[in-house]
Length: 312
Image (tube, rainbow, N blue to C red; front, side, top):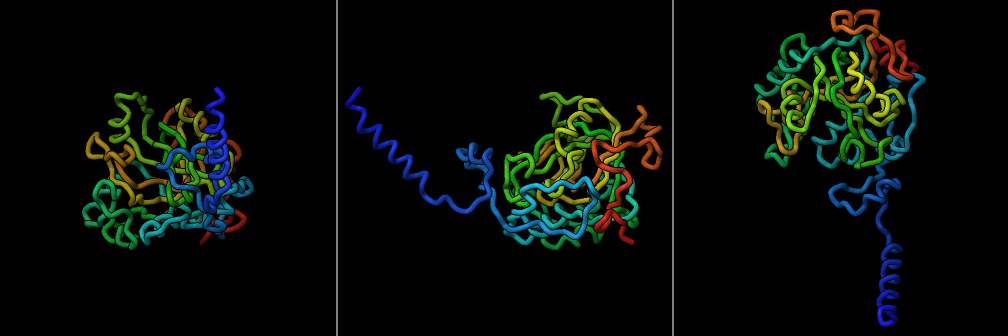
């Protein structure tokens, strides 16, 4: 065994020398450092503090480390990603929410597709989110909700999971307080199995996401997951958003780099989730009095400027 000692000594010195080398300025958490062997995810980057004049969470807002290190545009480099990330991180939608149904989102999706806007995942042969987002809305149906509007949806959260590594959260993956919570919303409960999951999500669901910035406990995955398993009727309120990085499913088939969903219109960011005290959709209309807050999120808090006051 002694003949191996010189090699072992060399190996130890080499490892110590490597770890002493500068590895670049990152804001990586302990959980990220453990996953450093997986090069598919870029390192969490420090781009500066997140700044906003708006707080839809009232006294329930909760500061996270990502608020100090990831700006409104995250670490996006392209103009399209920067403009889209501004919308993903917009906490300023205000006013009376438009009540939306999946049929409304299908119409919005068809309107955008007819307009000829090039959008979608570059790995699928598209050009990514457009820098000129106003073009997305030039041919929407008159009177329809549009990106930036406050909306509410009544239905079910049929799936909830951690978000992915992306520019809007400065690639701070997989640290839970620094990434989005991804939800699939549907108008009826869905039982998702490995064999049927994609087809059911493709034909019945759309996406909602709560962002990490100022996120209250009520919008964390641990608070949302019981709503999925309990098949609770919920009202989800937040900003209407067009995800120009992806394409919707084609029938029951999703793109290899796209989530399974029937439209890329989302509620993102989610500002509030409420649970119906009744057990039938008919008793859980958006304007009924049968709603209670999830966790610590107050139903009386506004969606506007500082102090929860509504804009306009």
